[in-house]
Length: 177
Image (cartoon, rainbow, N blue to C red; front, side, top):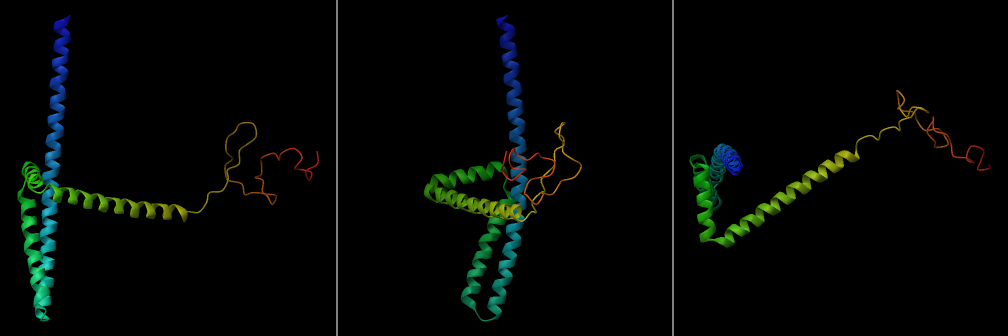
């Protein structure tokens, strides 16, 4: 009996390890795919920055053009790193950076958290405003006896009571009983 329980426990442990391994592989695949996409976007942005720098140079603004070119060079390096890196390398590089400059990593996390907070606040405000401008729904009339709603909503009567609902005692005849 103890041997069968041990076998069941070992099988459960093996299955859990397989599931964890599969999930880890899927996460790595997603990180690889997303980092490549991000790298392509960053590289595209670097090209845009470089063209802005060229326009500034054509207008005789060499200082800002030089800054734009430096920003484009850095963006291209980041973009190529993202495209060429796999999940393990990205994690390793982030860990190394965090060991060398822990305050920079903490500050980066704070900035990302603040950006995420602003995004969520903006999106929730937009959702709230969308709900405010939706037309109100008309009250639904319930049929006496079965509690089922009527086929169509019934507008309120001039007295403010919905049709189909009995008025409270004493209200029908002006408050007298």
